[in-house]
Image: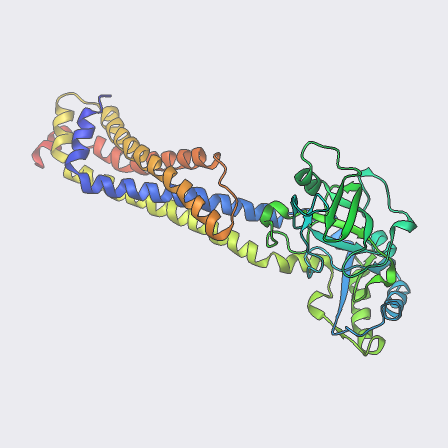
Length: 405
């Protein structure tokens, strides 16, 4: 089809054509970025924590600064381990979806010149390691000698496990086993690699969504820390075990307070942690649907208006031998030109908007895959929206169209 007459018609309706083009461009920009952000949230909510959340619970104390670690740990672990159904219990500093307690930047050299990132250091005693059921997929298991006391913040020299994601970040394409890294004066050597072990605040830590699995697992002695405990049990027994421990806390540790916010099953902690992310996903998907609906209504409205304005023109074309199919194709081609111009502009706006989001909100870079996806969606939407008015135009008999002038 010759598009010169179509371009000439659009030139005579510059304002209307410009408005629908800008509407499509805005829809393309919003659609690409909103879908990307929604997909990122969905991936985050489905994050693999690396542990069996249904079988784990945590109990956390607060306001216990003067407590004796060995004494208070002994009381808590005795209470937990004597409960029917408890499989293992131990001392940790934190867990996925709980309070973060061991965040620190590391370097790959003792001089501190080669920054490696900001992981979360999980400090676990032998009982916690058994409760979490963590095991390296490469490297070796921890020995009794690997569990050390803590100095100021971390052991001075420790064998550790790190996650696969963090290893790939630090040494891409290299064998991480035996590699050293440092946190201030503390030196660490990689003894093993675990597949997954999420940080306590995935998606909201210093590295964003890219650093959800940047974890370092440090073996420590049981009396090296106190205040946070992990217990493993059959999922059917776990709620009762947790209720018993919570009820016993005031008499068991009168010198401390139980933190009820973080004394829950890991499944509950996960559910609560991602509440805002699920709401944001629904909001973003709602924005996408609203933009598509508004754009479709705009195309339908404008096409219907043009059909009404061009009744005589359509009648003349029909009288000169134009078929219904040709009239239909005319309006579809016209919409294709408008959609194409809007989508090209929208892709530029989508990229620019993503750059602004990266700068001000530290979001990830928009993958280029979303641009053609958004383009195809809007092309299809435009063709579907214009088909109704175009079919009404094609159905007008030539004699009626000519008399309506």
